[in-house]
Image (cartoon, rainbow, N blue to C red):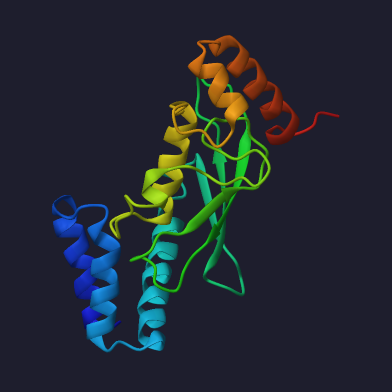
Amino acid sequence: MSPFYDWICQFYVLQDECLTKSFKPVLVSVCFEFSGASSSKIMQASRARLFKEYKEVQREKAVDPDIQLVCDDSNIYKWTALIKGPSETPYEGGVFQLAFSIPEQYPLLPPQVRFLTKIFHPNVHFKTGEICLDILKNAWSPAWTLQSVCRAIIALMAHPEPDSPLNCDSGNLLRSGDVRGYRSMARMYTRLAAMPKKG
C-alpha cells in the first residue's frame, strides 16, 4: 500500500470534522497532484482496502444478519448486497438488492450504490434505483465501509427525508401528511418486488 495514500486516509478519519464539505474534493485533488502516486499505486491501495473489508465481512456475517455483502468473483470493484427491510416500516419482511460500483480511488471517493430491487421511497429514484444519501456524495469519509454504507441505507429506509426527494410521488405524500398513503404504496411495492412469491 502506498504510504502517502494510507496517510491521507488516516488524515481524513482523524480530521473529518475539521474539513468542510466543499474543501474535501480540493484536498484529494491537490494531494494526488503532489504525491506523484501513479494510478497503479492508487489502485493497489484501493484493492488492499477492499480485501481488508472482504475479510471483515466474512467475520461479521453472524453479527449482522440483516446485511449480506458479496464481492464479484472476477472484479473486486463490483459488489452486491442483500439488505432486510427494517422492522416497523412498510419494508419489513422484504429483501432488497443493492449494486455497488467502486471507484479505483476508494476509499477517498465514495462507492456508487443503487437499488436493483424496486422500492417506493422518497430518497430512491423509482426507475434507476439511485439513492439520495449525503454520505454517498459530499459527506463521504474514508472512515465509512461498504458494510456501514449498507447500515446507513437501512437507516434511511426507516427514516425517509421527503424534503430532498428523488421519488416526488413518495415525497409529496409525506410532505402533505399522508403517511398512511405513503406506507400503503411502499408496502405494496415491497410485496410485489422484495418478498418471495408463495406457491
